[in-house]
Length: 276
Image 1 (tube, one colour):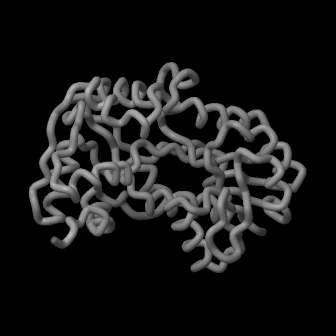
Image 2: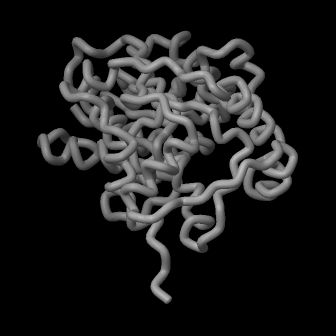
């Protein structure tokens, strides 16, 4: 049984690949831009790349790209794929998910898979802990992080836990065919995350509360307007309101979800101030 791991340049895919390798499970990484030996070209927006990537494959770890999903599903069925594990998002559970830039693509892929004969497992993480990397430039330059909602809560989950969860459902058929909402072990505000990160780095990390309009203007050119609006709307909805935490990571991996502090330790180099 061979496994195709899409999104081969992503942290979750690479973590999953390492786990599959260490357990002797045959697999191939697929990527839009292969950058290591043995990686096949699999551009989820280009159906012409699907037949080669799926040849001989029985299970797929799939990133949620909606534009080519119908063709991907058709080719997967033709190739004899039996199980698809989708890296989706817990945002699909929100009202109006089909109309939100945060969730529409994930929901469309979920729906395409559920309408197919493919055995499907849905991994629905909440907030990636790695979103904090967006603060790195400001922090390394000594500037305060601008936050429109410092008191907004999220459930940061370590990418290593997502990789382990995916490995669990790919390697144990009894765990497949379900939907899992994956969170970190704590509901944390952005301000609290900066506090934890500062403790790990051994220096205070300043932040400044700014208006939604100022933040949106600052990210213009980096974050598309509709996506920025959707983020602001979500952050406003969780401002001062802790989000629900699940034990799905522990049920799948056998250990408690890694803390944001652990993530900060693992990624401290990304925030290191340059030597002057």
